[in-house]
Length: 473
Ligand code: GLN
Image 1 (cartoon, protein in one colour):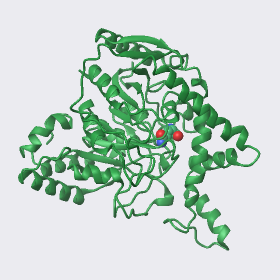
Image 2 (tube, rainbow, N blue to C red):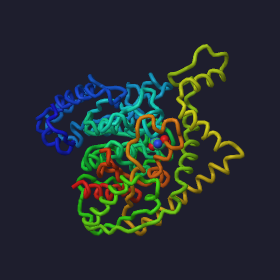
Image 3 (cartoon, helix red, strand yellow):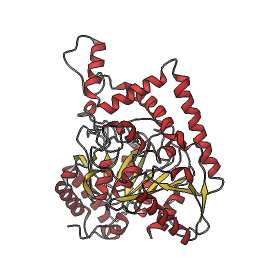
Image 4 (tube, rainbow, N blue to C red):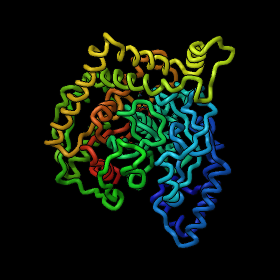
């Protein structure tokens, strides 16, 4: 059995000595997963394949190799492709769709010795903030099962929080890594746009989507990021920017760092509970020698509107491919081709996905394009400019990850606008293309985790990691 809850960096030395073997560790984790099915964190568990992967990594270790992620047990969000396994996006549309290739991140982590244990539950096509929009049912929060785990990567977050995996991969278009990380008390990082290849990630909003890691320590996030980052010829938006050795350069000495605190992220919407925990942590950063200064990001009020116009526009175009012809679900008993398209899409997409496709189609339609889509693009630039200006004065920015802690199951599901507002602090990073990280930093009065968000300059994930490291230790 797993003797104590620990992170990968802690276990690594033992794994490299074969005690425990990776195979036996994987068996323990498989057992834990099957004991925690009530959380509903997984869509598929690879009982047989995970053990096969483990045996081959064990053999490598016996042969003297020491791959960088040897034995890291990773759960993968079900919108990332793994060859010959299904990738459902938690949608009826793709319920039995099998991927024909490995996403680039999958190849990279497997080459580095990680073991993929299963696919995690999510909001359908990554649209949502609670994992309540899943074809496979809601993910429960390991800290209180009457509460959500957040979304859309709720399954990845819950799996790491409940120690059903050592780490996980998720995707973040507007907060889907950071918000569930915050709700479940784990670390979650959305890299700079272009830092990690999107090849093999099912597209939601292509100019926003990024894959990133979840883990229980900063060192583990750093180790995983180092492996998945970098230019990939299969994704033309991945950047040719050198990838630093993040774990080797982890440094908790943050004296000399200037940290900005934007006033627009500390308004009345912020729960008092969360505010006080964040304030305590800001104080800790001061004590650690950082200069903390107030800041203004004047276009913050427009982030949610711009985000929901631009991402729905991109989604309406990206999801046009699910037409009943090329993917697995197809309505039967149809009269003609156009009936087949309509019935297939009406039957296989859930309510939220349809809402987004309709919104997106509307903002792109002639007559409304200038009023909505073009205007939102301009706002996106203004938001980016806010951050550019801020980063001439500060090295990173601290905010709450979310205005409140994990809400109750069902609390917001009938009110899309309330649901959208839970992304109010996270969408700006995707609009601006900058990296963001949520770190667990305390609990509210109901013992639910509070997350603190660190935002940084493009391609400067190291500063986020170091700041997080200073707070962790
Ligand atoms: N909750 C946000 C949305 O519904 C973010 C989703 C995401 O990052 N994938 O769009």
